[in-house]
Image (cartoon, rainbow over all chains, first blue to last red; front, side, top):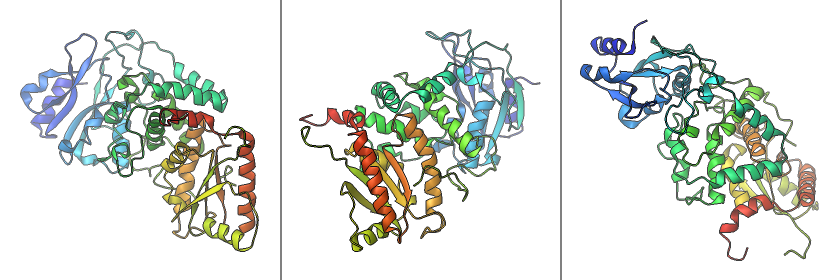
Length: 286
Length: 148
């Protein structure tokens, strides 16, 4: 299997794309940064290792990239986002050249994080070999250990009483500073005008108050229900450390159990919230 | 406030074609029901953004009812089917953040079901009354009110 640099070269040589979104070496050891490569000379910047944690598909829907033919280096989890974007008619399959990464799991290596452990999203990953790609590249690295603590936390939360759950989330959301980093990084938060930015009427309190934080986090979670592909980028970028993956994964669980639906798997499948079934469950309706 | 008996505030989002007309029928038939409900008429249940429910709680509601046409009866053919799918997800999300089934209610009430409307309102008003005021959510508002 060819390495990432020779693949990138051949993409430009055969004019398969105008630019390549990939990973480059960062200034600090143990992390990488996103890079957009536009010429053959810049290709040598590209790297691929187990620190390639970011989901780069969020750049595909940026205005400046729309309608262009873009190549992207994407792991299985990132490809789920690309599949979902195609299913939601946000990008065209023929406009994106996917360099799929056969991945054995990624990790966070810089200060404050344990680089001997695999990232949380990789533990439950079912697409280590990508399910949609134009070309495959292998990421070198050994399988790292890791435990899925969040799955237990979700079950624990489910077993609490409503009051305890409310108190738990009140405490978590209180820390939110309304920076909207979770929204900016999310590959599926592509609305040109977010409901949080609307001022007439103002749906969500813009200052970081308890009330506004609660509303924002519920709305963010609902707008991603049945769409979130679980790349966990929102939680990674959250400066307040709110465990957003708990909510996202809970909603993915609901989508699976109620509708047998898993987002980001089939670009031709109808989206969950855009369709309906006359036989949908309604035991909760009087 | 605190010395008087607690009377819940129920917010109801109802569709124009079925539940609103059903409630109207209850009125014109001189049926009696508890007066705790404040109704907001929308064109269709499909028009009800989950944001409405949040906003109702922010504005001090103790319970919220969402009601529309029975499946298959929608004036716009499929509005209530879309709404139902949304509620299945949204209801689970609300539960997960601590807003349980005894705060948010859903019902189908057709234009001829004045009696059902009366029963639904009486039932949920009693449920919310025993449950008490929604202090959890109202505490979130505390930063905003001058006199607690």
